[in-house]
Structure formats: C-alpha cells, structure tokens
Image (cartoon, one colour):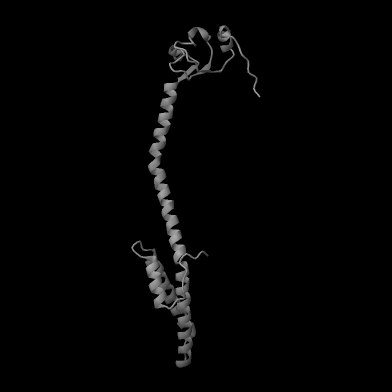
Length: 193
C-alpha cells in the first residue's frame, strides 16, 4: 500500500520541489498553481483536471514544464476517436471478407454430403458398366475404361460443385434435383461431418 502524506497548503511550494508529476483537480475559481509555486529549473508534468483551469497557463512557456489541461486531454481523446473512426471502413472490409468466407464454408459444408453421395452413385454406375462390358466385349481393357470413367466422374462432380457455389444457385433445390436424378438416398442438408 502506498503511503499517503497530508501537508498544509502553505507547504505546497516546498512539496512541489520533490514532485515529478502534479495532478491538480480543485473547484477553485482562481489559479491554485502559479509561476511562484514551481522553481525555475524544475522538470515536471502537470495535469490540470480542474474546470475552470487552476494552473497558470504561462507555466507552459517554461522549459521543463509540460502542462496538460482538460481541453487538451479532450482534443487528444477526440483525435484518437477520429483516428479510430477512420479505421472503421477498413475493419468493416475485413469483417465482410471473413463473413463471406464463413458463409462460403457453411454453404460448402451443406452440400458436401450431396457431392459425396453423387460421387458414390457415379462410382456404382461405373462399376456396373465396367463389369457389364467386361463380360460382353472381347479384349476389354478394364484399366483404360476405369481411368476414363474415373476422370468423367471427377469432371461431373467438379461441375456440380461449381454449380452449387454459384451465387445464383438454389443449393437446396439443386441437391433435391440431383438426388432424384441419381436416386440418391435421403440427404440431411444440415449434416455435420
């Protein structure tokens, strides 16, 4: 706990010789701190929080004395607020960017199950077709057929994803249509993986 020493007002000048920072806050209608209170070569920071000012403003002219009053503190606060206000559009831009990224991520999470189900359905079709043609065609090159159809599956699912990411697309409607076309099992559009 700091030690508090109480002195008489008539000892003020002497006490100010030992002070580096002075905070003045009185209800007086006159200067309580004047040129006579502070020795000539004294370095001191004076904060005058009084209204009206209680520190003689001519003290500012003396080297080593820094005098800050309520008006100056207000200007500093106003300047800080103005600087912060100027940064608001920049902050809003950053927020909007991350909000869009988050919304894209949410949207992506929503259609991942549908894309995976479509891919699995196409792979099932691929397996059946390769198996069917292997039995029907002599010298059937299963490796080539699998390679070509795998590329087709990738292109179809990529195209479907591009379609779902389009701003003009109704994701729910598109998923419903693709589910009907490919006879996909019931998809939970709010599924979390």
